[in-house]
Amino acid sequence: MITIKTPHQIELMRHSGQIMKEIFVGLRDVIKPGITTKEIDTWVHDYIVSHGCKPSFLNYMGFPATVCTSVNDVIVHGIPDDTVLAEGDIVSVDVGVQYKGVHTDACRTYPVGKISDEAKQLIEVTKQSFFEAIKGLKAGSYVGDIGEAVQKFVEPKGYSLVREMQGHGIGLSVHEDPGIPNYGVAGTGYRLRENMAICIEPMVNMGSRHIKISSTDGWTCRTRDGKWAAHYENTLLITKTGVEIMTLEED
Image (cartoon, rainbow, N blue to C red; front, side):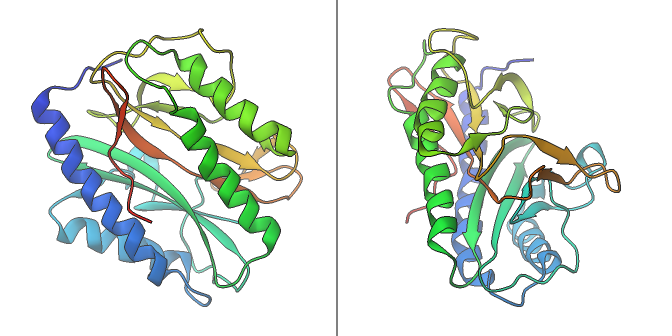
């Protein structure tokens, strides 16, 4: 179901978005060689709860943690555990924050210590593809406009885009309609409306776009060829003249 947000709901989302921004800034110091993904999860959980909010992902459809921690070849939905992050790794941390019944959702891919130039470029291309997607985006734009912009930016650089996972509407639920693929044709698909909230989340692979889901936990999504992936996501409010990025921290 697609929901148009009321002014009150928008204010609640701005609040949870502010908590999200603070989390992403804090994680810059938290994520270092030697930390476990479970320790990252605990830090984010405690931050969310101590600020009067709730973790959106915890027990959502059975997911057992507050955040998704996806390391190296894991694209999305990595479950935090005793895995120790090493110098040179990358880790995507996907966070959902609920405040008084409304949600925001965002993700960043972090370097662990000093990383390779190839890994830096993967993270930067993934992040920049998000900003390419929102150029000119406003009420009246189409979902296909987003997918085409991401695809035209990413694929000529030799990377691939995951097709089985996509962005989505958000607000009263973590996942609402419409789906927001990271590929497509401009001028097609659902037409965006003022005061809709959506998540745009490019998932970019160094190698093939093909994925595999863990048969052990049913969640962890990896690249099939073992090459690394990055993920970048924000919650946006669609306005008459553009977008408001509710979860974007200052660099």
